[in-house]
Image (cartoon, rainbow, N blue to C red; front, side, top):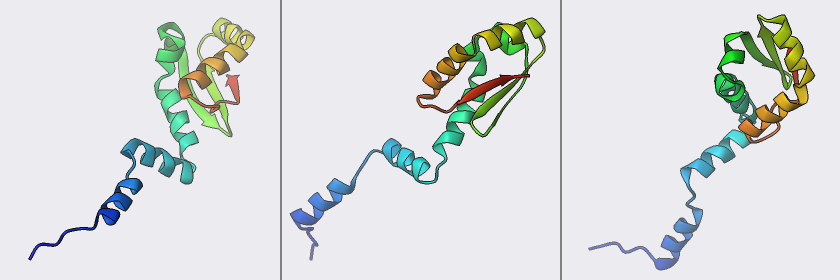
Length: 107
């Protein structure tokens, strides 16, 4: 004896199906991890975003309360980046796809 599923039951299950990427995004949002993931990705992609010369003079990157702290080895570079802080924030947020960075502090 074979068991045949009713068409309504099959259609109802198909309606609940969604791509795994969408499911993971919803899960990250539900647990409020999407911001932290964006922060980690920005730190990892620092060289790609800012370029190799700036990345070579960067000692340390870390986030605290939506602020990105960047420790640099070059005082002139620190001054130059402070002058264009809004552009740096804009570049970082474009890369993240949302407003992850509220402020940048160059140390």
